Length: 64
Image (cartoon, rainbow, N blue to C red):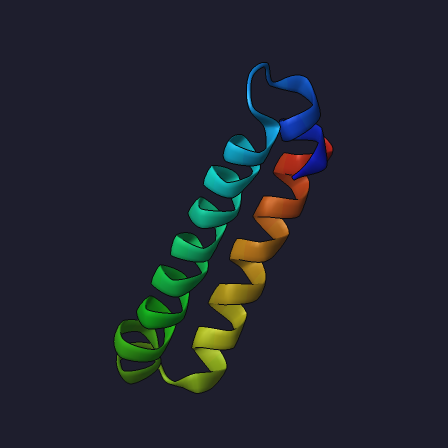
């Protein structure tokens, strides 16, 4: 988050709040999706593997 705020122009506090809010919304949606959709459909072990693959893809995307 600090890199996004440091590179943006304008009110850094407001931009930091927007980035943090977007992060919280994504966290909430991910938790609901995993608990309500994936776990009942795939089962707990497959849900854990799916989340691990999704997180690994995010890490690879951040490195590039």
